[in-house]
Length: 162
Ligand code: PNS
Image 1 (cartoon, rainbow, N blue to C red):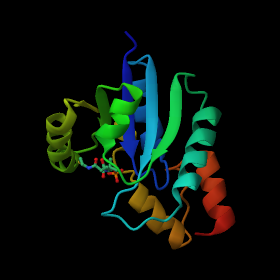
Image 2: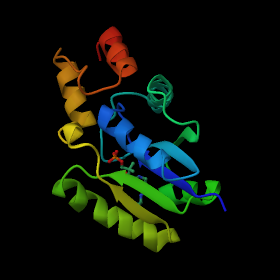
Image 3: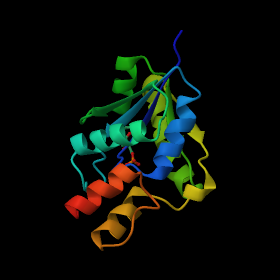
Image 4: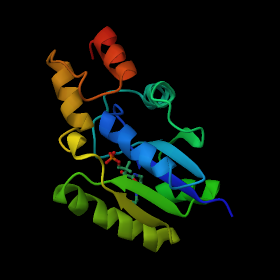
């Protein structure tokens, strides 16, 4: 049986921290879906299609394994996507206790909804301070975001000055 997992998130934009988690997760499963999901609780910077294409470019540029699929999911439940692709596991990166507190209720709800388990992965501590919201803020104020994002994202944000 193929072991299939999903790494969901807003990825607005994808950061070096995300790529680290994606690479670790891809090594643990036969197939890994990196899923861009609309988060109604957040004000988006980039359209979902742009986030998908930056993820695809960044994964390619970083030479990550070929078992990674990038997709998006509109307004439905995350577990509905899991059912559709036969994934029984969600993967989330945990940078701190704040992330544990944020992720735990979602993990329990997803398990109750569809018996989808969540696995928390610890990323490289070098990325512990990196978040998409921080990147958005630094970029908007004209600061250097190159230490925090893959080169394709830095080039895109600098070019578009968003
Ligand atoms: O990167 P984010 O914004 O922290 O990701 C959160 C996300 C998009 C994974 C979360 O908001 C989500 O799962 N949304 C899908 C809607 C859903 O299934 N909700 C019920 C279970 S929490």
